[in-house]
Amino acid sequence: MGISPSKKQGRKYLNTITTGEVKSGDIIPLLKAYATNKAEVVPKKTLGPFKTDVSVYQTPPKTGLRITWVGHSSLLIEIDGRTILTDPVWSRRVSMTQLMGPKRFFKPPIKLSDLPPLDAIIISHDHYDHLDKATIAFFKGTTIPFYCSLGVGRYLERYGIVKNYISELDWGDSVMIDHDMVITATPARHFSGRGILGRNETLWSSFVIRGPKHNIFYGADSGYFPGFKNIGKTFGPFDLAMLEIGAYGDYWPDIHMGPDKASNAFLDLKGKLMMPIHWGTFNLALHDWFEPIERLQTYAQQKDVDLFVPAPAVPTEVNGPYNSYWWMAYLSDIKPSEKYDL
Image (cartoon, rainbow, N blue to C red; front, side):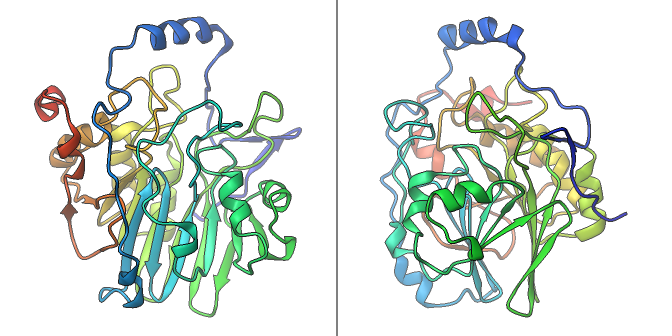
């Protein structure tokens, strides 16, 4: 079927299907829900500290594919001899100011200055938990190529990245890394904006990364939509599909999937292994911080989905199903696996 380019209405980009965001009438009920919420949205036990053994990067992964989960949607991906960083966020808070807003549960496990040489940085969209001014500014003066969704390049330029090293991609656009790796922007169901004004005036995307040996999918932020089946038919099967499972809620069901719909998206994509991302790092919803991964394990068992769940900070080779169960050490006295038995 192929991938169709994005469409706009006036200055605003559109999703491929009708998509609701938080409505003005939901604001008061939503504030009440936050005020009365009793979920453990922030870990009672401090997570970490986690620390990456950077000496690992001196030796290429034997399988050709290794992932370091920095947290949330920040991933250091070593694939077929190339190293790619996705949506890097190293700041303490994901907000327009570091004085307030959602705060990290644990410090970044690796210093930006200790990252191995990068072949590319991918920015999926302009939300603060995916596009971090301070982190981008660190790369000022480098020649690392940035690949981002349409319209996001202006922020990268503003934060110090030279325009020549920025490639804005529409859905269906592809770029080459050297001669044997292709990055393709694909649709997602989400929205954009870094403030009250200018909502949806930049695009949001997912990405296919195909090397000579491995083919992987970075889902970034997305609600469930039929486009996953098309992406799977056009670009799949995928050795690894990295899909968001956290920050879902009843007031915004269309723009985040949660573990049930994310596991359905994985099946649509024709994935071999599913890696959950966008959880366990920031308080962005009303659910327990560990609820997404606990629910995902149950859905994965029901739907015969193989999971790849590395611990934060640990460079982990992709060589079949794997679960570190790292979060279990930080749980309260309750037994979440029983609480979320579906």
